[in-house]
Every structure is written in C-alpha cells, then in structure tokens.
Length: 76
Image (cartoon, rainbow, N blue to C red; front, top):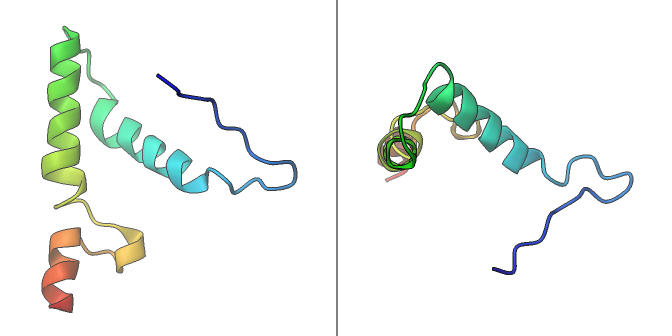
C-alpha cells in the first residue's frame, strides 16, 4: 500500500510530536478500559471518537481549551 515507517531525524526529537500526542490522546480517551468483541466494534468506537467527539466536543489546548465547535462559533 506504499506505507513506510517514519523515524525521527537525528537530533530532531520533535518530528512526530503532534502525531504522538494525538495517538496518546486517542488511546487514553477511546480505548482505555475497553475490550472490543470484534473489529467492527473497534471501528465503530473509532468512528464515534473521531466524528462525534474529538473533532467537535473534546477541548483542545491549542484552541484555548475550547472545543472546535466553540472555537469556530467564537471566531465567526
């Protein structure tokens, strides 16, 4: 599928900091304490997390501790 592993460049420890932060948040918010019965259950949980929670309700530090919806309403 053309996917290649990504490694930090020597002396550049922050190359993947945003991706690492996202995946830590994903694991903590979405997976911790869950035992999924099937791949479909995992996919449904991921879809809910990304489509309904992370992008709309979860507060983001980069947005002044506001959810994306709140931030967009404030900016409009």
